[in-house]
Length: 323
Image 1 (cartoon, rainbow, N blue to C red):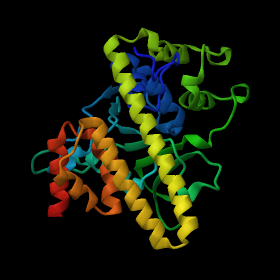
Image 2 (cartoon, helix red, strand yellow):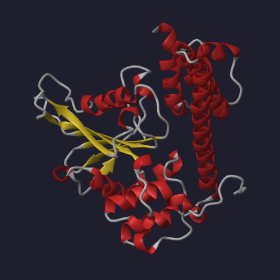
Image 3 (tube, helix red, strand yellow):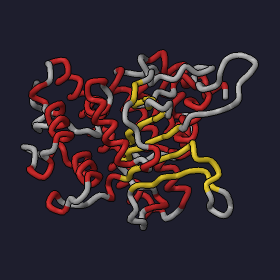
Image 4 (cartoon, rainbow, N blue to C red):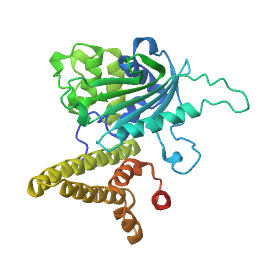
């Protein structure tokens, strides 16, 4: 390992590599079960699960870009999409709803007869940001379901669970519950030099062991370095976007000026992230990216990690031109 990026003892669980290392492998599924049971309603807690293909086999090329961070199924048939979301984006809630439709559709039986009996579907979002409409709300764990006008639950089998990590501010000595300990580790694992005494219980000792970078193979160390670089680059461009947006808003004082600045920054972010993955882009691809709407640009920033090569980018851009 070259040491330019990684100086910590433990991985950052909010990187793609770190998240899947801790939660996404069969030998470590006890960690995912333990974490899910901390945030699920008691009557929906699970004792075992199996991992499913996280790449949706949809009806068209766009659907096939719906690749979940983790997709698993409990012993009772409940489906769980578990996503780590590192940066705020427009229409994030729409995206969550869209993703939830795939585990619903796959339950349909082939043939002429089906009674539409569905197993529950959960979309779990671990967010490294705070919703704009929740900034003044101290609640950090949100469970969302379908309700009627009297706020009675209309349908109990579709749930969206969002965890706003930045709202968790407890120091180590103030941790009280198992839930507190999980949130502390998600936020502070790479800051630790050794397992604190308060966190030396079996579940977390397993986590510390698999998260220790010294135990990685050279290939795993390289993959983590790449994932960490992407995480830091994304944080940097998001922070820059926020700062430039504030400065432009002060200078121009007009909504259209702020919107134009936000679109220009989204173009820079999209091009920079794709260049980081694949190198130089063709003039035609750059021109196509520059012609996207702000919503399409933010969608591109979100899905670009699912592109295997630049041909996937061309397909994605072509779909936007047709649309």
